[in-house]
Image (tube, rainbow, N blue to C red; front, side):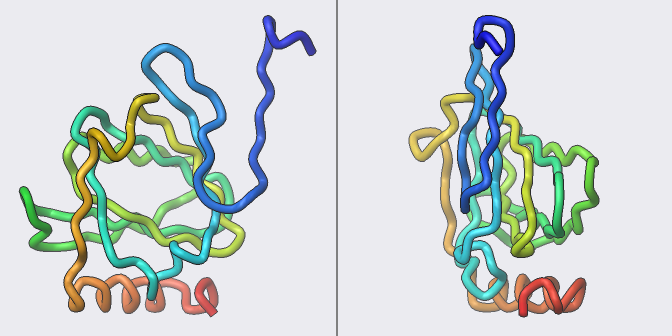
Length: 143
């Protein structure tokens, strides 16, 4: 197909991969990577200039939302359901854990990155909450 008419993109690797940028927006895929298993999550991020939309395409995932301003005071888990859109609002702390077969479609501003995002290291208690929540939801996801 002529790419002036239609772009076709896919990603079957590991981790995060932007696939299409146009104007001010980006579409990317997030797939399982060892850093996203519950016991390895040690920080959350927030984007200061954009909302970020997550759509679970396959597998299982839990999105964790952090309450608070410059620090996270509480974490709230959201078990994702396939084909639903989850719009994390600008400035909201978040992270996700994914099963090994998971793929998440992400839509965000194309210039989203470390220059306009913040990162906060989770407390030991919050890290434990992520592990316990993920294992309580579906222990077989995490082996």
